[in-house]
Amino acid sequence: MRDLQQVLNEIAAEAAGDEDRGVVAQYIPELAKVDAKQFGIAVTLPDGTVLSAGDSATGFSIQSVSKVFTLALALGKLGDSVWSRVGREPSGNPFNSIVQLEQEKGRPRNPFINAGAIAVVDLIMAGHQPKEAIGEIIQFFRHLADDDSILIDEHVARSETAHGDRNASLAHFMRSFGNIHHPVDHVLGVYFHQCALVMNCRQLSRAGLFLASQGRDPVTGAQVVSEQRARRINAIMLTCGHYDGSGEFAFRVGLPGKSGVGGGILAIAPGKASIAVWSPGLDRVGNSKLGTAALEQLARRMDWTVFGA
Ligand code: GLU
Picture 1 (cartoon, rainbow, N blue to C red):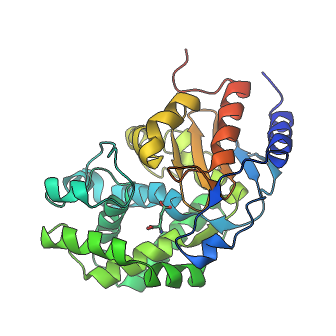
Picture 2: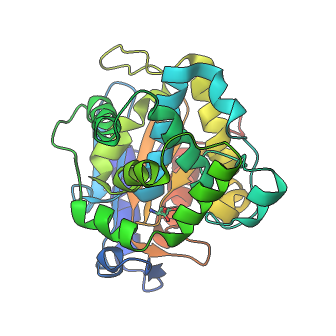
Protein backbone atom coordinates (compact mmCIF):
# COMPACT_ATOMS: atom_id res chain seq x y z
CA MET A 1 0.00 0.00 0.00
CA ARG A 2 1.20 3.53 -0.73
CA ASP A 3 2.51 5.73 2.09
CA LEU A 4 -0.53 7.78 3.13
CA GLN A 5 1.31 11.01 3.99
CA GLN A 6 3.10 10.93 0.65
CA VAL A 7 -0.19 10.40 -1.18
CA LEU A 8 -1.76 13.37 0.67
CA ASN A 9 1.23 15.56 -0.21
CA GLU A 10 0.94 14.58 -3.88
CA ILE A 11 -2.79 15.29 -3.93
CA ALA A 12 -2.35 18.72 -2.28
CA ALA A 13 0.42 19.60 -4.75
CA GLU A 14 -1.77 18.56 -7.69
CA ALA A 15 -4.68 20.63 -6.33
CA ALA A 16 -2.43 23.68 -5.92
CA GLY A 17 -1.57 23.53 -9.62
CA ASP A 18 -5.14 23.02 -10.84
CA GLU A 19 -6.62 26.10 -12.53
CA ASP A 20 -10.11 24.70 -12.98
CA ARG A 21 -11.42 25.11 -9.41
CA GLY A 22 -15.18 25.63 -9.85
CA VAL A 23 -17.20 28.54 -8.48
CA VAL A 24 -17.49 29.54 -4.81
CA ALA A 25 -21.09 29.50 -3.42
CA GLN A 26 -22.79 32.83 -4.08
CA TYR A 27 -26.06 32.67 -2.13
CA ILE A 28 -24.70 34.56 0.90
CA PRO A 29 -21.95 37.22 0.86
CA GLU A 30 -19.93 35.48 3.61
CA LEU A 31 -19.40 32.42 1.44
CA ALA A 32 -18.99 34.36 -1.83
CA LYS A 33 -15.90 36.13 -0.48
CA VAL A 34 -13.96 32.95 0.45
CA ASP A 35 -10.70 32.57 -1.53
CA ALA A 36 -11.16 29.77 -4.10
CA LYS A 37 -7.43 29.01 -4.14
CA GLN A 38 -7.54 27.12 -0.84
CA PHE A 39 -7.36 23.34 -0.54
CA GLY A 40 -7.00 21.16 2.54
CA ILE A 41 -7.23 17.44 3.25
CA ALA A 42 -7.02 15.38 6.46
CA VAL A 43 -7.34 11.69 7.23
CA THR A 44 -8.02 10.30 10.71
CA LEU A 45 -7.02 6.65 11.18
CA PRO A 46 -8.75 4.25 13.61
CA ASP A 47 -6.04 4.82 16.24
CA GLY A 48 -6.79 8.55 16.20
CA THR A 49 -3.71 9.58 14.20
CA VAL A 50 -4.48 12.55 11.95
CA LEU A 51 -2.48 13.02 8.75
CA SER A 52 -3.02 16.07 6.59
CA ALA A 53 -1.80 18.30 3.77
CA GLY A 54 -2.56 21.74 2.33
CA ASP A 55 -4.81 24.16 4.24
CA SER A 56 -5.97 21.46 6.62
CA ALA A 57 -5.91 23.74 9.67
CA THR A 58 -7.97 26.54 8.06
CA GLY A 59 -11.57 26.72 9.29
CA PHE A 60 -14.44 26.73 6.81
CA SER A 61 -18.23 26.77 6.95
CA ILE A 62 -19.23 23.10 7.11
CA GLN A 63 -22.79 23.80 5.91
CA SER A 64 -24.56 20.61 4.84
CA VAL A 65 -21.80 18.30 6.06
CA SER A 66 -23.38 19.02 9.47
CA LYS A 67 -26.46 17.04 8.38
CA VAL A 68 -24.64 13.74 8.91
CA PHE A 69 -23.99 14.62 12.53
CA THR A 70 -27.46 15.95 13.32
CA LEU A 71 -28.89 12.74 11.86
CA ALA A 72 -26.62 10.72 14.16
CA LEU A 73 -27.65 12.91 17.10
CA ALA A 74 -31.37 12.47 16.32
CA LEU A 75 -31.01 8.69 15.89
CA GLY A 76 -29.13 8.47 19.18
CA LYS A 77 -31.85 10.43 20.99
CA LEU A 78 -34.99 9.15 19.32
CA GLY A 79 -34.09 5.88 17.62
CA ASP A 80 -35.93 4.62 14.58
CA SER A 81 -38.90 6.92 15.15
CA VAL A 82 -36.84 9.43 13.14
CA TRP A 83 -37.84 7.49 10.03
CA SER A 84 -41.53 8.27 10.48
CA ARG A 85 -40.65 11.90 9.75
CA VAL A 86 -38.07 11.60 6.97
CA GLY A 87 -37.29 9.01 4.29
CA ARG A 88 -34.05 7.58 2.98
CA GLU A 89 -34.34 7.68 -0.80
CA PRO A 90 -32.20 9.82 -3.08
CA SER A 91 -34.29 12.75 -4.26
CA GLY A 92 -32.93 13.26 -7.77
CA ASN A 93 -33.84 16.90 -7.22
CA PRO A 94 -31.82 19.94 -6.10
CA PHE A 95 -31.19 20.15 -2.35
CA ASN A 96 -33.72 22.94 -1.81
CA SER A 97 -36.49 21.67 -4.10
CA ILE A 98 -40.08 21.97 -2.90
CA VAL A 99 -41.74 19.97 -5.70
CA GLN A 100 -41.41 16.50 -4.19
CA LEU A 101 -42.58 17.70 -0.78
CA GLU A 102 -46.04 18.38 -2.15
CA GLN A 103 -46.28 15.04 -3.92
CA GLU A 104 -45.08 13.21 -0.81
CA LYS A 105 -47.25 15.08 1.69
CA GLY A 106 -44.58 16.95 3.58
CA ARG A 107 -42.32 13.97 4.38
CA PRO A 108 -38.88 14.77 2.91
CA ARG A 109 -37.14 12.13 0.81
CA ASN A 110 -34.00 11.95 2.97
CA PRO A 111 -32.25 13.70 5.89
CA PHE A 112 -29.61 15.34 3.67
CA ILE A 113 -31.80 17.53 1.50
CA ASN A 114 -32.68 20.79 3.22
CA ALA A 115 -36.27 19.80 4.03
CA GLY A 116 -35.07 16.55 5.60
CA ALA A 117 -32.39 18.25 7.67
CA ILE A 118 -34.92 20.82 8.88
CA ALA A 119 -37.26 17.99 9.97
CA VAL A 120 -34.32 16.36 11.82
CA VAL A 121 -33.66 19.64 13.65
CA ASP A 122 -37.33 19.77 14.67
CA LEU A 123 -36.87 16.29 16.19
CA ILE A 124 -33.70 17.28 18.06
CA MET A 125 -35.52 20.30 19.50
CA ALA A 126 -38.07 18.20 21.42
CA GLY A 127 -38.14 19.57 24.97
CA HIS A 128 -35.55 22.25 24.19
CA GLN A 129 -35.47 25.97 23.64
CA PRO A 130 -33.67 26.89 20.39
CA LYS A 131 -30.55 28.06 22.28
CA GLU A 132 -30.36 24.78 24.17
CA ALA A 133 -30.68 22.79 20.95
CA ILE A 134 -27.87 24.84 19.38
CA GLY A 135 -25.77 24.20 22.48
CA GLU A 136 -26.46 20.48 22.28
CA ILE A 137 -25.40 20.38 18.63
CA ILE A 138 -22.13 22.29 19.26
CA GLN A 139 -21.35 20.03 22.22
CA PHE A 140 -21.89 16.96 20.06
CA PHE A 141 -19.38 18.24 17.50
CA ARG A 142 -16.85 19.22 20.16
CA HIS A 143 -17.17 15.83 21.80
CA LEU A 144 -16.73 13.94 18.52
CA ALA A 145 -13.82 16.10 17.36
CA ASP A 146 -12.35 16.03 20.87
CA ASP A 147 -11.88 19.77 20.51
CA ASP A 148 -13.66 22.44 22.58
CA SER A 149 -12.53 25.28 20.32
CA ILE A 150 -15.18 24.57 17.64
CA LEU A 151 -17.50 27.55 17.18
CA ILE A 152 -20.38 28.86 15.08
CA ASP A 153 -19.84 31.83 12.77
CA GLU A 154 -22.65 34.17 13.81
CA HIS A 155 -22.25 36.31 10.67
CA VAL A 156 -22.91 33.28 8.49
CA ALA A 157 -25.86 32.22 10.65
CA ARG A 158 -27.39 35.72 10.42
CA SER A 159 -26.79 35.92 6.71
CA GLU A 160 -28.47 32.51 6.19
CA THR A 161 -31.48 33.89 8.07
CA ALA A 162 -31.55 37.04 5.94
CA HIS A 163 -31.50 34.94 2.75
CA GLY A 164 -33.58 32.07 4.10
CA ASP A 165 -36.86 32.45 2.22
CA ARG A 166 -36.57 29.12 0.44
CA ASN A 167 -35.79 27.19 3.62
CA ALA A 168 -38.62 29.03 5.39
CA SER A 169 -40.96 27.95 2.60
CA LEU A 170 -39.87 24.32 2.98
CA ALA A 171 -40.39 24.47 6.74
CA HIS A 172 -43.83 26.12 6.53
CA PHE A 173 -44.88 23.65 3.88
CA MET A 174 -43.87 20.69 6.07
CA ARG A 175 -45.57 22.30 9.07
CA SER A 176 -48.81 22.50 7.08
CA PHE A 177 -48.64 18.69 6.84
CA GLY A 178 -47.88 18.36 10.57
CA ASN A 179 -44.25 17.34 9.97
CA ILE A 180 -42.74 20.33 11.84
CA HIS A 181 -43.88 20.65 15.45
CA HIS A 182 -42.02 23.76 16.64
CA PRO A 183 -42.41 27.35 15.40
CA VAL A 184 -40.73 27.68 12.01
CA ASP A 185 -38.48 30.59 13.03
CA HIS A 186 -37.16 28.56 15.99
CA VAL A 187 -36.42 25.51 13.85
CA LEU A 188 -34.72 27.58 11.16
CA GLY A 189 -32.68 29.44 13.78
CA VAL A 190 -31.22 26.13 14.94
CA TYR A 191 -30.77 24.82 11.38
CA PHE A 192 -28.91 27.95 10.24
CA HIS A 193 -26.59 27.79 13.24
CA GLN A 194 -25.79 24.15 12.56
CA CYS A 195 -24.90 25.05 8.95
CA ALA A 196 -22.68 27.92 10.19
CA LEU A 197 -20.37 25.71 12.27
CA VAL A 198 -16.73 26.38 11.43
CA MET A 199 -14.32 23.46 11.38
CA ASN A 200 -11.07 22.62 9.69
CA CYS A 201 -10.30 19.38 7.85
CA ARG A 202 -8.40 17.91 10.80
CA GLN A 203 -11.32 18.49 13.19
CA LEU A 204 -13.92 17.27 10.70
CA SER A 205 -12.10 14.05 9.86
CA ARG A 206 -11.66 13.35 13.58
CA ALA A 207 -15.36 14.02 14.23
CA GLY A 208 -16.36 11.50 11.53
CA LEU A 209 -14.16 8.70 12.86
CA PHE A 210 -17.06 6.88 14.57
CA LEU A 211 -18.59 6.26 11.14
CA ALA A 212 -15.43 4.44 10.04
CA SER A 213 -15.33 2.42 13.27
CA GLN A 214 -18.71 0.66 13.71
CA GLY A 215 -20.33 3.66 15.38
CA ARG A 216 -17.74 3.77 18.14
CA ASP A 217 -15.10 6.40 18.79
CA PRO A 218 -12.10 4.08 19.00
CA VAL A 219 -10.01 6.67 20.83
CA THR A 220 -12.40 7.48 23.70
CA GLY A 221 -14.30 4.18 23.53
CA ALA A 222 -17.67 6.01 23.39
CA GLN A 223 -20.36 4.22 21.37
CA VAL A 224 -21.81 7.17 19.45
CA VAL A 225 -24.44 5.17 17.53
CA SER A 226 -24.97 1.42 17.21
CA GLU A 227 -22.94 -0.46 14.61
CA GLN A 228 -26.03 -1.00 12.49
CA ARG A 229 -26.92 2.70 12.61
CA ALA A 230 -23.39 3.66 11.55
CA ARG A 231 -23.73 1.33 8.55
CA ARG A 232 -27.05 2.87 7.68
CA ILE A 233 -25.78 6.44 7.97
CA ASN A 234 -22.98 5.43 5.59
CA ALA A 235 -25.58 3.94 3.23
CA ILE A 236 -27.50 7.22 3.17
CA MET A 237 -24.28 9.17 2.63
CA LEU A 238 -23.46 6.97 -0.35
CA THR A 239 -26.91 7.29 -1.92
CA CYS A 240 -27.90 10.84 -0.92
CA GLY A 241 -24.76 12.67 0.24
CA HIS A 242 -23.97 14.73 -2.84
CA TYR A 243 -27.21 16.44 -3.83
CA ASP A 244 -28.10 15.56 -7.39
CA GLY A 245 -24.56 14.31 -8.00
CA SER A 246 -24.67 11.39 -5.55
CA GLY A 247 -24.53 8.71 -8.25
CA GLU A 248 -21.56 10.41 -9.89
CA PHE A 249 -19.70 10.63 -6.55
CA ALA A 250 -20.33 6.93 -5.81
CA PHE A 251 -19.12 6.09 -9.32
CA ARG A 252 -15.94 8.16 -9.11
CA VAL A 253 -14.98 7.81 -5.44
CA GLY A 254 -16.71 4.61 -4.28
CA LEU A 255 -17.01 5.75 -0.65
CA PRO A 256 -19.88 7.22 1.40
CA GLY A 257 -19.56 10.99 1.54
CA LYS A 258 -21.41 14.17 2.44
CA SER A 259 -20.69 17.54 0.88
CA GLY A 260 -21.63 21.10 1.79
CA VAL A 261 -21.81 24.34 -0.19
CA GLY A 262 -18.86 25.68 1.82
CA GLY A 263 -16.75 23.25 -0.25
CA GLY A 264 -16.19 20.63 2.46
CA ILE A 265 -16.69 16.88 2.05
CA LEU A 266 -16.57 14.18 4.72
CA ALA A 267 -15.89 10.71 3.27
CA ILE A 268 -15.72 7.40 5.10
CA ALA A 269 -13.58 4.37 4.26
CA PRO A 270 -15.17 1.89 6.72
CA GLY A 271 -12.60 0.24 8.98
CA LYS A 272 -9.82 2.32 7.44
CA ALA A 273 -10.24 6.07 7.70
CA SER A 274 -12.38 9.16 8.09
CA ILE A 275 -11.44 11.76 5.48
CA ALA A 276 -12.23 15.48 5.26
CA VAL A 277 -11.37 17.58 2.26
CA TRP A 278 -12.09 21.22 1.57
CA SER A 279 -11.82 23.44 -1.45
CA PRO A 280 -14.45 26.18 -1.80
CA GLY A 281 -14.96 26.09 -5.60
CA LEU A 282 -18.07 24.06 -6.49
CA ASP A 283 -19.13 22.12 -9.57
CA ARG A 284 -22.46 22.50 -11.39
CA VAL A 285 -24.49 20.64 -8.73
CA GLY A 286 -22.81 22.28 -5.73
CA ASN A 287 -20.10 19.79 -4.75
CA SER A 288 -16.47 20.81 -4.19
CA LYS A 289 -14.74 20.38 -7.52
CA LEU A 290 -11.20 19.80 -6.31
CA GLY A 291 -12.47 18.04 -3.20
CA THR A 292 -14.21 15.39 -5.29
CA ALA A 293 -11.17 15.00 -7.55
CA ALA A 294 -8.91 14.65 -4.49
CA LEU A 295 -11.11 11.95 -2.96
CA GLU A 296 -11.18 10.10 -6.27
CA GLN A 297 -7.39 10.09 -6.30
CA LEU A 298 -7.04 9.20 -2.62
CA ALA A 299 -9.46 6.27 -2.91
CA ARG A 300 -7.69 5.02 -6.02
CA ARG A 301 -4.14 5.38 -4.70
CA MET A 302 -4.93 3.85 -1.30
CA ASP A 303 -7.29 1.26 -2.79
CA TRP A 304 -10.10 2.37 -0.46
CA THR A 305 -13.60 1.41 -1.64
CA VAL A 306 -16.82 -0.04 -0.28
CA PHE A 307 -17.17 -2.08 -3.47
CA GLY A 308 -14.02 -4.20 -3.21
CA ALA A 309 -13.22 -7.62 -1.79
N1 GLU B 1 -27.24 26.62 4.66
C1 GLU B 1 -27.45 26.07 3.35
C2 GLU B 1 -28.93 26.05 3.05
O1 GLU B 1 -29.65 25.64 3.86
C3 GLU B 1 -26.88 24.69 3.29
C4 GLU B 1 -26.69 24.32 1.90
C5 GLU B 1 -25.78 23.16 1.72
O2 GLU B 1 -24.63 23.11 2.19
O3 GLU B 1 -26.25 22.25 1.02
O4 GLU B 1 -29.38 26.43 2.03
